[in-house]
Image 1: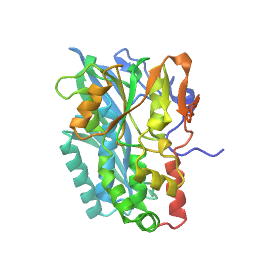
Image 2: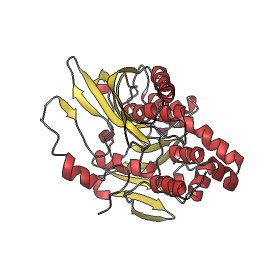
Image 3: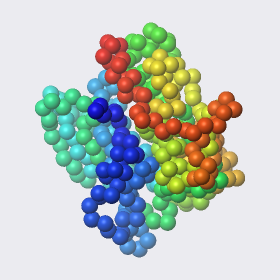
Image 4: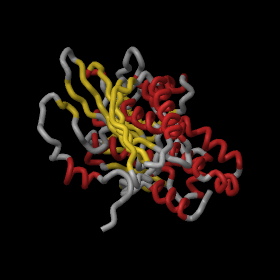
Length: 351
């Protein structure tokens, strides 16, 4: 039986992991759950510890600086869904045996820089070199933060009648990585401008600024009810996960989904659907009905585009996508198309 690439599906999670998470402790108020980005452990004095874990990236075709950026910011994006920036980080590095000391030094200096930029203290972990390690994943990490429990947002807190917002554009990270990984092909087939724009978009793959603008930095805004960052499965997969996590339904309108020209062209070239492809840098935000323009205005003040794409509904109504006047069940992607597109291009000799 072949295994699907990327994150495990909800059925596998529920069958193997969900009811097998060690000792049950009452202070764990949010544990592992489908579509939930962080765990929450209650602390004294009304505080709580929020934590999230993710793989670390080491993608030679991108570069050491870009790989370090992804390693820091993809985890920070998960923490951003709480409305808070990460404070502490642990990293486990399993590096290729042939990774040089100079390259490791460069990679780690960028890890340090990007962590410092967002106020993150790296508090420990593990570093080793592994024979036969040829993956674009160099290990994993955990980020955590301490905040007032009452102010921590969780994706499961979305409510029926909430408005669904999406920041930036679909497939932001996948199209940037594909463009930067296969520059000669993209320039030849789509032109230099598309390639350069995809490179420029790479540093929009952080959604920490989006989250803090929406939820508030010092004083928290009460109109935002939940957030969920866009990873595997794209914008539509993230909306599906948020709806499931909150025990709700959703109504999404296909024509409102923000797909930029560069994203569309690169997705067409690699034969992937931008709506279902990895979109780190975008954030799904739900807010109370009537407050959506206030949230959009806060994001616009930070030069972040934000679009209304639908609303949260009652669970019984299902998770629906309106496309060309037809309202149908929104499928949950069994596999993000980015993975097969990347390796197909690589194996085909695309440069």
